[in-house]
Amino acid sequence: MSAREQSLKERCARFGTVISRLELQALTKRQRQVAELRIAGLSLQEIGKRLGISAERVRQIEARLRSRAKIALSN
Image 1: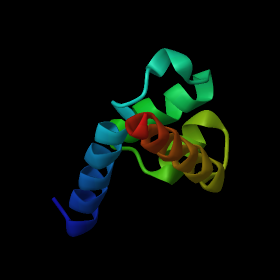
Image 2 (image 1 turned 90 degrees about the vertical axis):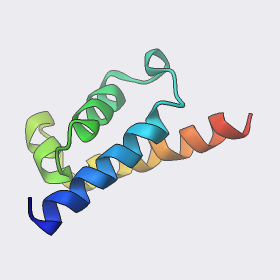
Image 3 (image 1 turned 90 degrees about the horizontal axis):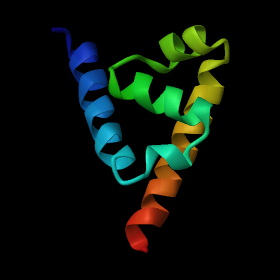
Image 4 (image 1 turned 180 degrees about the vertical axis):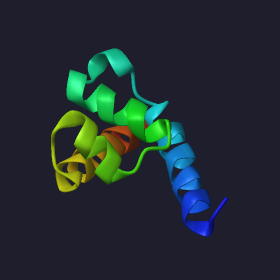
């Protein structure tokens, strides 16, 4: 496994930990799709291609999910 692949795998695992703090039913369909694909180890570009959106939009959705998880953790 290359260093790049290992790094992606580690980031996806950390994201999975963050998302586990949220109730998946409380997310929109797009947010759930992004979360599931990111946890599965896909890159922003790969997710964007699958969902027909830009990698930047995927990054924005992921950032919003991380923010929501931090709020959920603080409550």
